[in-house]
Amino acid sequence: MDQAVENQQRIKSDGGAAWVLHDLKIQFFMSECKALGLICKLITTPLWNLIEECSINIFDMNDRYLQLVNFLEEISEDKMMDFLLGKLYPFPDRPVKDDILFKALIAPSEHNSDCIVILCSILPAIGKLAKRLYHDHLPAGRFEAVPRDVRESARGSAKHNKY
Image (cartoon, rainbow, N blue to C red; front, side, top):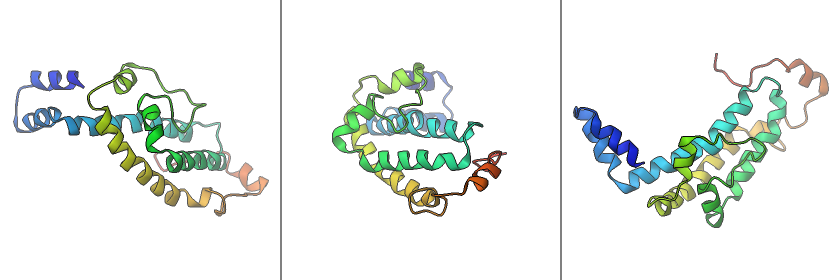
């Protein structure tokens, strides 16, 4: 996080860069950045990798969506430190890339207490959104029990609308 401030200070200060530098010096903004970085690294990137994986049928994602929704609904404040340290995430069978960004995100910092407060607000909200968005793929949804022939015919179907 300190490196972000250093990098921004090296950039010639135009109007936008000055505001970014100002924000980077505010602890709560940095805590928000850390929270969003953890969500990206531990939730959205592994989920997107699953969606992009060609060997997974669109209907196989039902279990993954349920796994995600359950994780987001069940995570509580007492488990948030494990999430913050990169020890708890929704897809434990999908390894998180242990790169410099991940190391920086899980490193102890003065932002951790605010980050936990932010995560305690954001993660349940994402859980509610995921439950609504993936409703058809969850138990009692219309794609919960798909006939084998439909599953087979969907084998090559894209699991997203990104082309």
